[in-house]
Image 1 (cartoon, rainbow, N blue to C red):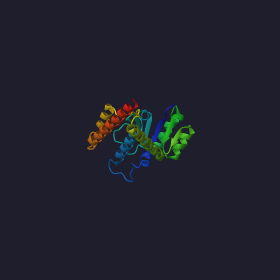
Image 2 (image 1 turned 90 degrees about the horizontal axis):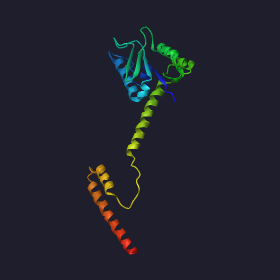
Image 3 (image 1 turned 180 degrees about the vertical axis):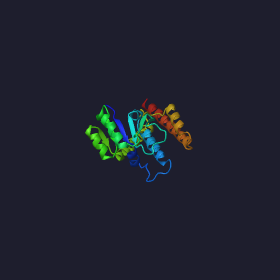
Image 4 (image 1 turned 45 degrees about the vertical axis):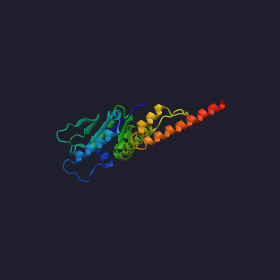
Length: 203
């Protein structure tokens, strides 16, 4: 299945993720941009980042920064001076060679209409943030289950020395481990005695 090209409305996503501010002091807007880009770099896979373009308005762009930059494989695009992110995103959608593979991330209805005209997919920024966070939560839960799962073993009447050694390695730092090991050996001896007695009676 072909992967989507993500075109992200940067400031729209920043607000949806709760990373924007009502008022910006010196350097605040740049810090907020970095936060949302870091969020994306942490939640998108390398393959997804390589097919992602994040678009910001030209206003308050970092001084001296080229209009296009690359961060963590993502293309960061600032609108031309005098332009805005919406117009730049519309142009990207219009000029894209595979518009049906585009997935636009924006809650802006104007941009969603532009995507619909070219049969591109789109998702509200709020929903996109939720999807990324849910995906990571499920991945973490799945990893936790895999780490905590003990492989099923054949049941036998004896606890092998290897098995005892393995449990001691895992629980050896617990003060009660020595007592548990002693109890295990005592029970094992009792089982051995019972089994030997049963064999003698059968003979």
